[in-house]
Image (cartoon, rainbow, N blue to C red; front, top):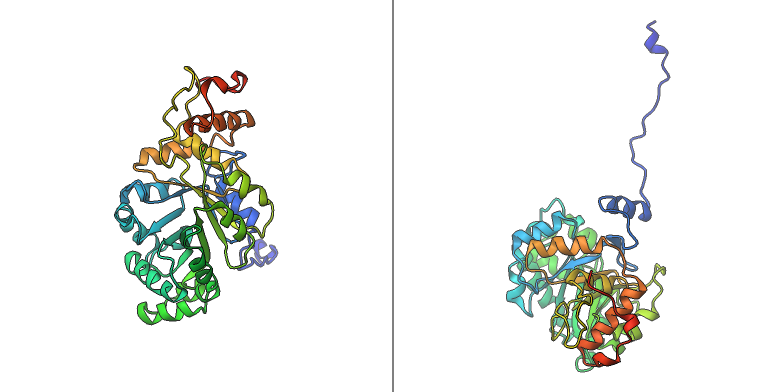
Length: 346
């Protein structure tokens, strides 16, 4: 008998240990420096792992730079097929490559789409049909009802009531989509839409819908000059509650004005925040998961990623940016600013 035959017969298991959600997040975040502003996080109560920065098409970014953003770690993409469609069209080929049928990396991408045509639940198939044609996809991770305010809220209530007919496998919408586009394994597994979201332009309505089981993700406008969400939405959420909705912000860098430009009356030598600083402002708020960006170039992508890796803003920085935003909105006069709250250029 050969001596090697005396070695114990060790059975190697044919399965890999299952990673916990915390393990998966830690593994994803290991590509970035450790920070109090983790680059990846769970999107509220969904099981989606998302980058803290999301890319929308408002900047008419090219497909090449959209793919570049993905290579740098951005995995949340927001697409519209019926409002500002021209602006979004330039990223369409990239999204077809990342999310289209046959993509080997589809499950590494979180695709959020939106329709601003809030009418009746019966029309949702039309919107989904357009998006499936545009992007050649199997499924959508988050489908948003867009621009919800006091004017279309009654129609929204009717549409959102059909959430269970839209999301998840086995839904009514899934059967319709399968008849038109054919059945695929991913479509059967995920359904047409995995989660339902709404984009609110009325923060009272956003607050009203925070705890609805029909809504998985809430999107609200928020920036240093428009801070209503800090009073009406964010305080009503527990960041550690696994059952809270996912929170996405938009318009971080401005609405009617470019907030990276200094407001009239800002004393000389004071800090002028960069656009990445403005993303950090939103991401430093309670329970915000994703700040949506409208980058134009890959240089904007790089700057934003480098910016958030600095971590959350300090209370002093947040307080200063509140004053900075108030100057932009003419809520305060330069001579009324407490000098002890000013921060010098950095």
